[in-house]
Image (tube, rainbow, N blue to C red; front, side, top):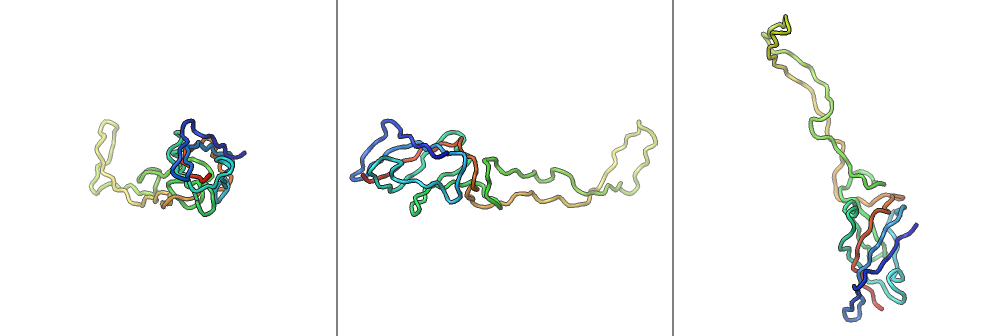
Length: 165
């Protein structure tokens, strides 16, 4: 599958020698590490691609950040929360809240505690826990490029594209 480019009706404008137009860019089912290669031909025959700025997208687009690499003429996709490895899905990383889960502990009744001899007594027994909580399993950091073969077909971005005609 490949990207789909659709000109937004009524968005064509001219800034001096530049042709400016809004385009909806629908992504595909297999992202390529390093970005999607785009050419001026994607935005009209006989044009030279100068640049693009992403200005919006569908609701699912919030799950990934699109950026245009002007040097290599590629649309690169980034996962906003970073992490230790390139994600291949749009599922946000999850971490356990501090204190959640299990941890090793020893329950020691306070000295002088009363022995419970019947169910009606039900005294309050102070307990001291010792042990350590595990650190959350999430590596923070700046955005990281989405991994190869990630399925991004649910994402559509609107871009302001600048070309020379």
